[in-house]
Image (cartoon, rainbow, N blue to C red; front, side, top):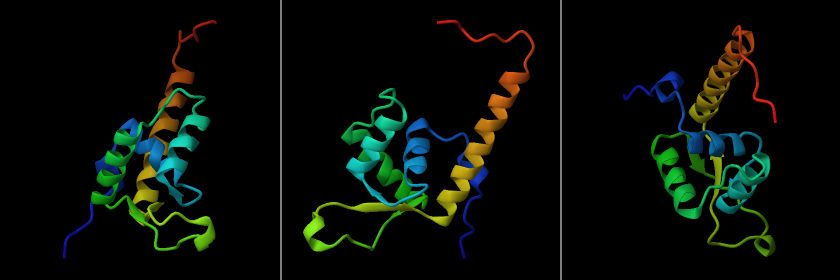
Length: 120
């Protein structure tokens, strides 16, 4: 039996991986929904173009961090070509580990003597 890797083996996450996992943290979504959520959440600073997004989704599926959802919306609300994605248990653990890592990093920044934010 193959032992699955621990969450720490994925850290630090690639930025696109992090944004996709974060988009799936509270709901299942299809690719376009992920693109729009990332764009809105980052104020337009991060844009996942289709080639980048779908390549990322494929790699996240291969690493067993996300999976295609088997649940489908009502047929009148659905497009059969759309695939919905959700986090796996490992994906949730990896997202939590990366979030902890980033929070620790921010904490270090805030306690660092002599650090000043750039003024606008």
